[in-house]
Amino acid sequence: MASVIWAVLAGLFWAVGELCAKSVLKSGQVGPVTAIAIRTSVALPVIWAVWFAATRGWLEPFGVAAAREPADWHQASAGVWWKLVLGAGIAAGALGLACFYLGLSAGEVTRVKPIAFALAPTLAVVGAVLFLGEEFSVKKAVGLVLVVGGVILLTTRNGPGH
View 1 (cartoon, rainbow, N blue to C red):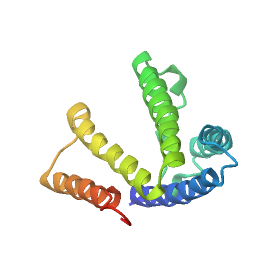
View 2: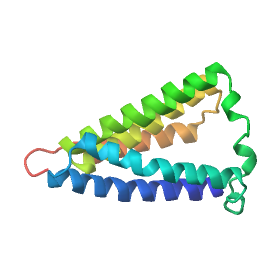
View 3: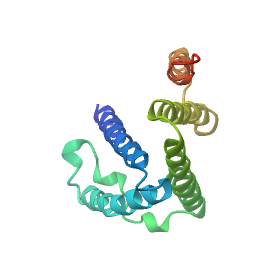
């Protein structure tokens, strides 16, 4: 249950964050790359503070076991480091965020966010099944169809006046 609560909070924070980001970009006073730089700079110390709390066991009452943060993380294998740096850091952290903010600066939140945030889990489910050995079921297939269908409904234009 803790994972669902954390996911709901993530969605809430992302929604608030992207609405604020779009408002900032719409003002014309800050560009998308500046917004990413500020967002990342402000986020980094908060992330390290959460890491510190997690490694001390302070988040255990909230379903985050200190054991999930191995003390010898810096000795991880080269393969783990490459996936962490290139996949999580550069692909998701930098390029995904840059593309998202560039999309936000050029389009509506109601189109950009659903496309990005539906494509990511759809591809992640397929990748998790193919590469991580996770189970695929009819229920997951129906869920993916519904997510993609919902995004199509949210993002396609019906002509003048939408």
